[in-house]
Image (cartoon, rainbow, N blue to C red; front, side, top):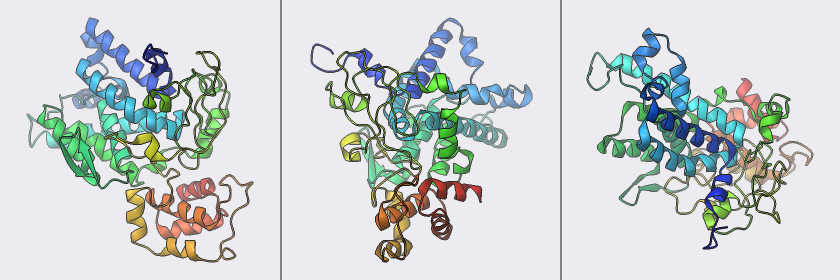
Length: 396
């Protein structure tokens, strides 16, 4: 602990989840290498003309982790530290890693296509020789996902002005453009984020059962036991005695972490330890997440911890509220007798919860972009189990 009673820098770093910490470290390493060899960084960025004419397709992937200069690292790192770690705690490290890479890949593809199509119209502004803005594009996609799950009707941009939450990511891009930031690649990242929020690209992501299967395989055995790795089932591999919630509070205790996604359990902080090193490699016991207001209050980029169909209680998401206002099916499910909709057994993967949980499942699935009739049918076929219902919807 530091002399003032708050966590030390080493403890703050250890409290960052595994993949977020890995991305920050990779970006810092690339920036450092670029200081000695500028060509190295340039070889990683996504340049449409080089991807198409020279077939340097690796740029579409490598650009995801390569910041453009020191300012790109500082701004991107600041946003990723806040937004990335929150989403990773909710989703688990592997799911978040897949989402991060997927946003980067499709945003860069969209940037390449847009540049090639618009370059004849505005060759100076949309030149195919311009490179995309590195991993900051992905971070804007993550900010889009998180902000669109917020309950707030408006969000503030650094206290300067407020915009409706629905348009917050676009306003953020326009604000950066006034400061000399890029437009097309940033808009590409925001567009991909919106597509994920509304469920149009969710089929491209692995199901919860597939994530759990990967984590239990021998190939991932070395990775899932690394310090800070967040398991899909809610376990946190201990990396010290200070959690992210503790860092936010500024104390040295052990607080609970954020909730799961797609039916994943809540994520617990590393268990208390008598030493500052903690119990590295030990998985914490999953526990129910604390209220989102206690975790995300005061963050301009807070999505209240519920993204991509996570376990948001009824009315905890602006998108869910809008979806339920258009239909009476959820109300009829909540008001119907228990005999008409028997609760699944506690031994199932979705685990009980009665009519209130059924209504919650319908809200979450509709917020993911699935049609109401398909959601009700899938839940009935799955016996009320949320994970099974997601898999059924993704298969059809």
